[in-house]
Structure formats: structure tokens, C-alpha cells
Image (cartoon, rainbow over all chains, first blue to last red; front, side, top):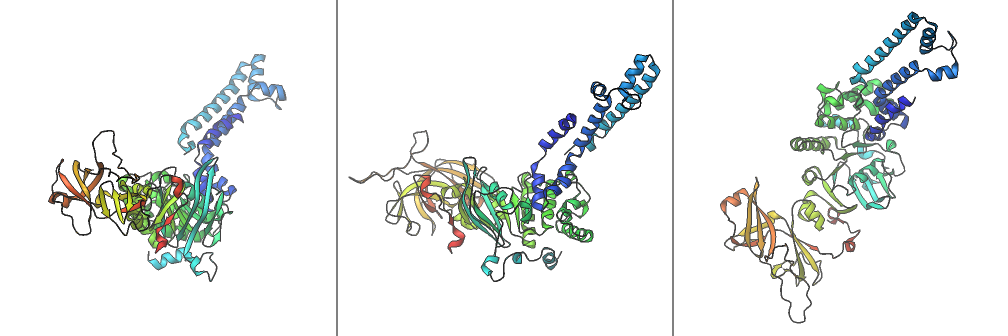
Length: 122
Length: 422
């Protein structure tokens, strides 16, 4: 969450108020202005914010184990699984899941990297 | 597009909202009535009062910080006045939010929606009003044709030039038949050549669609060319409203005279129907009629109204000011600019006479005389060559006599609307 805010807020702050004012003079309500003007301009920031938050959530270890424990197939997340298997000496299982996680983070990174133009806010 | 088609697109604005029978009201499209505004403790606008007539384009001219953008924002509903009313087509809209006013604002940076194509930008006003898709498509097509952007309809704002963006911005407001168009420094972001071309295009477009408009600018040339009338704003107060000709040729205040074009100023007094500038006496019975004997005045004249004669002979209608010496000659393209030093010496007061006036011998240098600037068109400059150091007679083909208020407060709240006088 704080990551999303960290990404979206600066974009929001630098956004020109004149777009919203223009929308208002054209006759749009606040909601219409938000939906048609503000939100599309924040699209990139919201997407990268969501991706970063997702990446952070996937890798979360400490708070997961504290809050929801480590029940296999119920509250066990991938990092917890890796930790558990590693402790049990099942390095192969831990590596397999770690590769999945690595691929996932690589995938997210590529989106952020290659879709930069698309994500860029004007 | 033929004019009658344009009228069908935009309807007749004069009938918008104005009640029947108020014939005089229908000619006024928008009025600002004694509007004042403060930001914290700074007075931004003081008792601003003006009308925009139907189909008229009015230019608000002022230096930066004069409050002109605030007036525009108050009319648009983006800012609230502390006191005063805004009336659009006979309806008081002071309390209405921006979106209910039906005013078209062309922002300085155009404020086009970056993620919408030209078509979608123009159609925005109709989409949010939930007009049928067919109608939107038809109207957008007409507007794109009107502003000549047929080839660019699928492009995004970032792919357009400044001038094209501006046309999109205008078309976007025209889509919902605005009561009045407000242009905030519309040519500020463009280079000099594009600026000149665009303002002619816009002027022609506005005359075709006949929508009343208000321009905000600090560029005097732009104001003279765009405005049917010009309102000169200085530090939150209107100094004068009038046609370009009136404001330029008959400025009512020193500020107007010097802000719109160049002007020479000499201090003097009124004496028996003459203007006395030190030892120089100019007969001016008509111009001095509204001043009392002995009143301190300013003689204001434009560089192009100075007539320079080496022989001392002046043409008819040109009044003699005094003699002078040519101090500098500069060729500046279309004309020649000269600096002259006039032989104006403080008149010695007679015994017992109070000293009404002394020529301020300006400048740090101890030379006597008062410098003025004169310009001569090329043919005149070529026909009568002058060189630095020449002694010449100086005459004026036109000038204004203005009261020389010692304190600015003496004329506070005094707006002269020359357009209403006749």
C-alpha cells in the first residue's frame, strides 16, 4: 500500500490542475472529471504501484509468519515454503519454488521496463 | 462551410437565456459588475466593471500581476469574487459552479486531454452530456472541418503543433455552444511568426462563428489586432476601455499611454488655454478646456507624432513645441528612431508669483534640456536627412493633455470608458 502511494502521489502532485479545470468548464461533474481525466492520467502510476505492491507482497516473510502462521496448503506462502523446505533439507523443492518466484519477479520487472512508455504519465 | 451552416451549428447566441422584451440586455453577452478580489491581504481586483457585447471580442490588456487572469477565472467560475456579480446573457451566474456556466475557456497550455484523440477531445463536452453517439459524430466532424484539422482527427495532442492544439481547444469548447469564449494568454507559448498568423486565423474564425470572446494578454500589438475593444488593467484596476483607436490615440492615463506603445511625457501647467512646458508654450484651447488655470498637467505624445524640421517650418496642423538638438539617430528597420534634447528651460517666475512648475532637468549628467524620442518613417527619413548635432524645430502633430496627479490615490476608482462617451 505505502508503495502504491509512494508511486502515485508524486505523479498526482505534478499533474496539471488545468486539465481538471478544463473538464469542469466544459461541464463535467467532479466524478466525470475523475473518471475521464484524472484516472487515465494516473493509469501508469497506478499500474506500476500495483505491480510493486504485488511484488512486495509475494516476497513478504516476517509479517506473514507472524500474522497467519505457517500452515501448509492453507496460510503457507511461497517464501515460507522455501524457508520450510530449506530447513528440512529439501533443497530441490525450495529451489523449484525459488525459480518460480525469480521468474515472476523477472516478468514484473520486464513489464515495468518495457512498458515504460505506456506507463509514463504525461 | 457556408455561414448559414455555421449558424445552424451554433444557434443564435443572442437568444440564449435572455428574457423576451429586454432588448437592450440581449446585446450584452457578458457583464462583470463591480468585482473585487483579495488574496489574503493583497488586493488583486478593485471594482472591475465591464460588458462584452454580443459577437464582440474584448481584450483585457495588462502587465503580469495586474489581475487579468483572475478576472478570467472569476468569469469562468474557477475563482470566486469577494464582491460583485458575473452576468452571462442576462443571467446572474455568480453562485453557479464552473460546469453549469457554459463558458468556453482556452487555457494558456490548451489543457487538452493527453489520452484522448483530437476527435475524443472535441466530443468530450457532448459525451459527458450523454448525447446520442450519432449526433456526437456529426457535430465533431463539423467542428473538425471548421478548424481545419481533418487530417489529424485520430492524433493525440502530443502529436500536434501548438497552433493545432489551440484549434482543438477552441473546437472542444464550441461543441457545447459556449455563452462566451475566454482566452487566457492564447499565444504566449508560440513563436513570434506563428503568433501573428494564428491571431489572424482566430480573429477570422471568431467573426465567422460570432461568439463573444474575452482575450487576456500583455502584448499590446496582440491587443490592438485582436480586440474590437481593449480594456487596460493596471494593478487590479481598469484604467480605460475603448476601441483600439481610442485607447492608442486618446489614452486617458499615463499608464495607458505608456503601456500601449511608446510615449513621451513632459510636465507642464495650464495657463490661459496654453500648455506651458517651462519656456515652451503650446496653444491648446481644446485640450486644456477640462483643466483649471494653473493645474499641473502632463503632455503626452507618441514618437511618431513628433515632427522635426531643419528649416523651422512646420506643416499645417502641426503645433510648435520648441527647438532641440539631435542627439542620436538609430535605424530600426521600418523607421528611424531619433533622440532629441529639447531646449526646455524652467521659466523664471515673476516677482511674487508662486512657482508652479520647474522643468525637471532629468538625468545624472548635468546637461540641460529634456530628452524625447521621435520616429520617422523611411521615406521621410530619406527625404530629409538629419545628422547628430543638427539643431531643429520640433512640432507635434498630435498630443494628449493629462492631469498630473501628485498622488495615485487622487484618481483611484476613476475609470474612463471612452466607448460610452459618444
